[in-house]
Length: 404
Image (cartoon, rainbow, N blue to C red; front, side):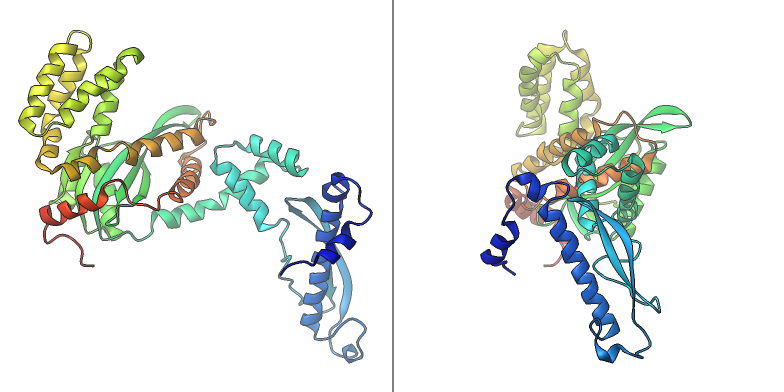
């Protein structure tokens, strides 16, 4: 509903500065208080069935009984509000509910700041500076803890029946455990849907990475509705190929080129990184496995003396690399694209870098989930060249494509 200009003019008449309108005791805060209390009185009238002092209220069995005071916290700071009461104690207001001490929008603001990587202390300072509201770090933690149930629902939600590609990747964080700081790997399964849209299927903290752990992860995906995965792209995770092949025997396990290149470049000086990356591309972008082997030999001759571990790493993993060359260019492009993994990693690092460590896995999951929720809002379009890749998938995996 649009507010008439005449009413606005009447309200601001006599006010001379922004502080008088927006400040701690300004018009906007007074107006919010007045509107809330007017609505509460309206709710009480509806509850009792008669307006204040109306004759039919006599001997009705219930009546107004003064008011109680409550302070509501919101983006305008703390607003003291009078809550009307009835003699029978049956009145339950909707606009300011029993037990409510803050507006939902205020909680959403806290969660939004938390999701962007701000610590509880940062959020505390921000709220005091912008809204003039003093809240404790414990209060902020209580608000964000409400997300934990949402994380559980998300982690157990039903999934699509078929994902043409699933990437597995890890983000490293520090977690306090028994008084010590431990490096922990939080693994993410990133699926590409039949529509070509990225989707994080779940996240898991590995106590002991191995076949048993990966069997648990893959079994969970199946129990949540995933009937088939065409390709699983991994970074040489110990025990994963055996685990996925036991649950999805038709899935092709492919060593992820993103991880191979990333691992290789760890040994390279910043000055030569671009040149080495270009030479590595001649290997995984070769037309055939035979040509890729020739290019690997050339790479080795050029860089063996300076970086001997790179070519040996590629040779040791060659069996998991060469399946790539059995696919047409359309599919190969979407397999080794860096966008699906690298952009996600970069976004998650931004929100975790301010944390020295997390008190437990649940705290890490909470922050990562909120960050992933923000990231997923941008995942509305198919990945590049997806239509061409999907047509090739339909030919190569005939009979496994879901019916439209």
